[in-house]
Length: 108
Image (cartoon, rainbow, N blue to C red; front, top):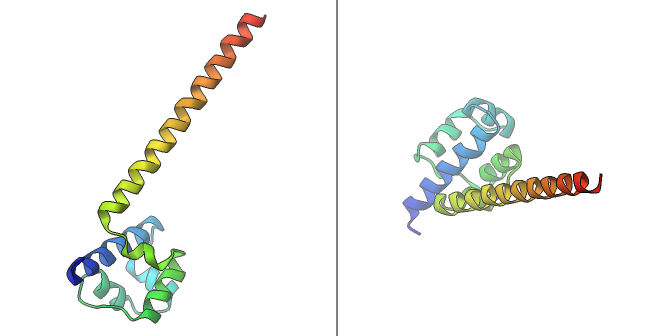
């Protein structure tokens, strides 16, 4: 992975986790006790954060640091697998419910 790809990955994931919390750049900066300009510059690919800054951001977002560096394609695959898992579980639960309902009717 090239350095610009790592920066883009960090930028994308930082925005994703921030928006998942429903926070503005200002709100994240406030919670991480760093400047809004720092968040803006990281997301805008103009600044590479120090390890201390990354640690503060991760603590504020309640996310493990490595997750900020997982490439988007891997995140999308992971999300797709998660969605598929939930769909399968829901389908199985519905089939079990329907089967038990039918079985209950036959018992009566």
